[in-house]
Image (cartoon, rainbow, N blue to C red):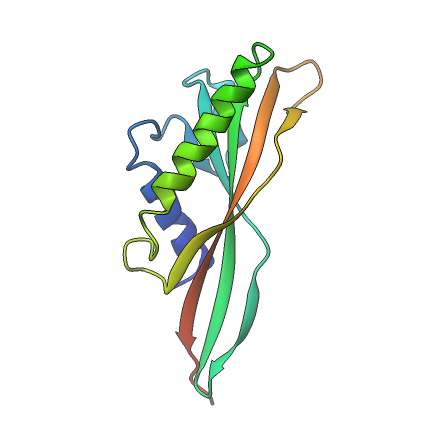
Length: 145
């Protein structure tokens, strides 16, 4: 397996939730934010990883997939409360799949970042964003030569 396979599994799991689909989720494609297809979005990107020996013939890689949850800023208060709900919904949904549907050893939400106000481009719309870090482990056999 590779990081890309794991990230694809995370995306598939997000899309199992009724509020998320191919119009408001992506792997590294922030252009969907400009689509106007939804009120909330989730964009995945690769986070930092660690790799270490697990046994004499295997290694354990701990990957991080960052789930960047966006909500377009419209009003003080309601927009922030909506983003908080989006984050809670995603955390609870992801927790139902601790092995990413039997693809990895362990997957769990490890951090939930602070809410941020951002603009993707000067003069563009304001977004509220929170980043959820999902760490997942993969054990790989090492074949020595």
